[in-house]
Image (cartoon, rainbow, N blue to C red; front, side):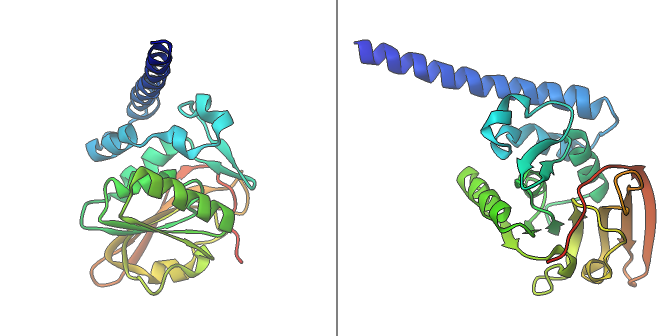
Amino acid sequence: MKWFFLTLILNLGCSQNADSYEIKRKIMVKDQIKRRGVEDKLVLKAIQKVEREKFVPEKYHALAYTDGPLPIGYKQTISQPYIVAYMTEHLQVDKQHKVLEIGTGSGYQAAVLAEMAKHVFTIEIIPELAESAEKVLDEIGYKNITVMAGDGYKGWPEEAPFDRIMVTAAPTKIPEKLVEQLAPNGRMILPVGEDVLSQYLWVIKKNKKGVVTKEKILPVRFVPMVKE
């Protein structure tokens, strides 16, 4: 009987913890994301579903739904929830899209994209992060994400072209190889700038004839995109 009550207490504690995170996600979506103007229902649904606490180190679980980036090791961060939602909304992903992500990090952004896309191919230059992200994504059960450790500047030519490309680290200029791997009617979003004080988000569009247009939309701060 003693073991029964101990097990019951432990189970209730786990359930309460899970419920607590779900409540925090709802508050995050309402106060940090919707309030700032993100309206796409598919984006909001994806952000509401993906458990952000699983993509940060255990010591930061309590901070998983705060309004800011968090360290994930190797001098890298998981982006602020609003920026994840903002970039995802501007990428305009749908269920038919093949998406390339540059900068897997912890895997959180890939998970959000996978909720909306047909398949996500994601590249991380730090092998340890690529391995840990792949493990977390596999444990959660994502079957439509492929992780590769490699140089994001090269893209993934074997799988190109991509309907959508998202870059989550900042190069000093727009990588032409990524533009080349963008499909007709494709769209890419990425931060660009030589330092955190000069970075802006850019949206790159390629029409059905292959004509490319570029638009600067928002000042941001991202870790630099590095080469092998």
